[in-house]
Structure formats: C-alpha cells, structure tokens
Image (cartoon, rainbow, N blue to C red; front, side, top):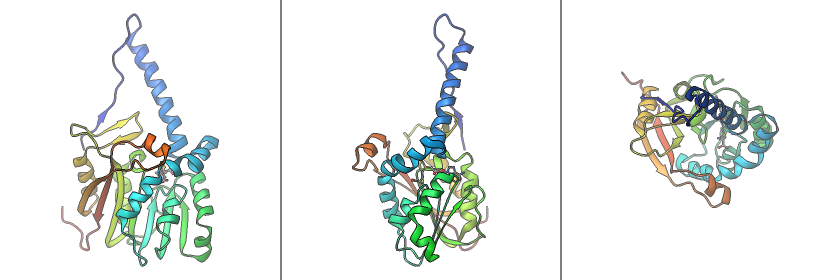
Length: 251
Ligand SMILES: C[S@@+](CC[C@H](N)C(=O)[O-])C[C@H]1O[C@@H](n2cnc3c(N)ncnc32)[C@H](O)[C@@H]1O
C-alpha cells in the first residue's frame, strides 16, 4: 500500500520555519488526540456525550445504509466490530438469531449493554470490551461480520482484517464500511496521524491480502435527513463486501 504522511509546510515571514512547523504539528497533534478521545475511542465526559448523543444522530444514515447492504438473515450469527453504543445491532439486526458486539471503549460497551439488555438476558447476544486486532472468539465462529464508521481510525487495519477473516466461517461474509469515496488522484495516507484516507485500489489490495475473495466495492450516499448528518457527512460511504473462501486461497 502506498502510504503518504501529511506534513506541515509553508513557514511564515520572519519566524524560524522549524518553530512554526513544530507549533503547527503540536496543535494538530492535540486536535487529533482530542478528536480521538471524543469520537475515535470515546472516553471521559466529552466522550460520553459524543457516544450517547452525537454519534447516534451523526451515524444514523450509516446504520441504514449498512442495514440495506448487509442482507442479514434470521439464521445468521453476526459480529459487529467497533459496535459503538449498539444501535446497529439493536435496530438493524433484531431479526438475526445471534449477535455479538465488540468495542474498545468501556463507555460504548456500557451503552450497548443497556440498549441490548433484553437480548443479553435472553442469551441471544453478547457485548464485549476488546480490541478488533485480538478478537476473543475462536476461528470460524460467525457467518457475517460488519463494521461501520470506524475502520478509518484503526491504527492497524490489516490486523483488524486478519482477525475478521479468522473468526468468519468458510463461506461467511464481511460487510465493511472502509472510509469514504476518494478523489481519483488520492494516495493512501493518514490525516493528522490518526485517520486513514484510502485509495480504492489499496482497500481492495488490503482486503484481498487478508485472504478474502469476491471483493466488491461500492459507494452509497449517506447524507441522511438530520441536520447533523447532512452537516457531517462527506463523500459517499465506501462499502466493501467480501467472502471468506471455503478453501484457503493459494497466494
Ligand atoms: C466513530 S465510533 C463508531 C461506532 C459505531 N460503529 C457507530 O457507527 O455508531 C468508532 C468506534 O470504534 C471503536 N474502536 C476504535 N478502535 C477500536 C479497536 N482497536 N477495537 C475495537 N473498537 C475500536 C471506538 O471505541 C468507537 O466506539
């Protein structure tokens, strides 16, 4: 994958360029860390507000688009990685026989457990605190894995894909939102050292490198109908469908 880092440049007149660059890097670094703790992996009071109030409204059109794309069936066994406060599982997978959610934020896991209380009590769901790069399930456990609004902030997306592949059973499918549509000349890079922006061919290569076949990439408008979602949505959502083959692929 061709990865480019975004660097500060263009020093002002009369000031040491290195001082300006260092200050600018410090400010962008602080902003990135703040954004990461409020929205990336929510923590603290602002993280709670973001997880409880902002994200559910902001991401509502993403849940709808993913619900339509995933084609979930009653006999599916679904894992959603980075499940956030569990809205997708509760509202778009209520007909699915067994659902599991995993998230790295204890705030999100707490909210998801509240939202899913009935299913947890019935034994048809679980919500786990954990890292997508080390999933706490055995190989071949699920028929479908979903992920939305999150891949772009995973520090090691290839490790996430390897784990998603491992826990899918042969013939199982991944339905993943991996970032947004990028302009044709985009080179894969990280914004503010936190958020991935991918060229489409790098997404395809990354998903195939994890072992998936039948990789299909499409785009869907997700501007939604709330003021917040219209304000926050960017280019079209990138949806990736991929299958774990029934026999391992030969490289
Ligand atoms: C922007 S939120 C989206 C949450 C949810 N998918 C939704 O759309 O409402 C990103 C989520 O990814 C989770 N996350 C970030 N890094 C993670 C990791 N390494 N493993 C598991 N979850 C992670 C965060 O805790 C957060 O809940």
